[in-house]
Length: 258
Figure 1 (cartoon, helix red, strand yellow):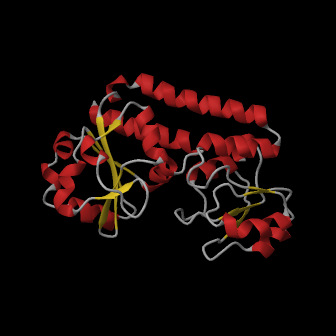
Figure 2 (tube, rainbow, N blue to C red; figure 1 turned 120 degrees about the vertical axis):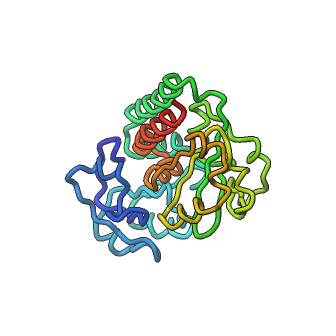
């Protein structure tokens, strides 16, 4: 909506960020300050109704199956196309653009973002064929991202390929995630080892493992850490978050491989 020049009157708080909004959203909002709702314990339907919205966009509402009927009583509600986790960023953008009557502008946004990804790949031919491990450590667990992830799909478009040591790992309780035990972190070694840590304690947990300094990526300087905003931008791509993630991730990987 913001990318199409439409500022919402209210938004659900994004708990990953202190301000309640992602930095790419903050940048697009400028001085505008929509009302921020706390949706952690459910949507505040009365507050939403009090804003008298013309349209409700709920394309990434994980509880939409339960919320749709009540939201639709307030205003026409835009849902996901196939599923909140399966819709691509292109599907979501197109769906919202149609609801706003801005199809042509949306199509141009998709073309521009796609071109930006292709340009990044062409500008970094050294990425092609490099093996990648992409993982995060949180609360004493290490999870490798092995498939079905939007961020991993974007990294593949840059020419990187998932490490074969990870590709065959069994799935954990979350789709596209595989658990890696501390004694098996050698499985994470790759030409590029991309890591994300929600907290400093999570990073300390991983890096205090005596096996970490022995990894080729660590010894060779291709162990790359992305901060939490970049990790969120990769995991939940949109026409605003992709440029944010792309600029920061490509630069970090290119510097490491230089």
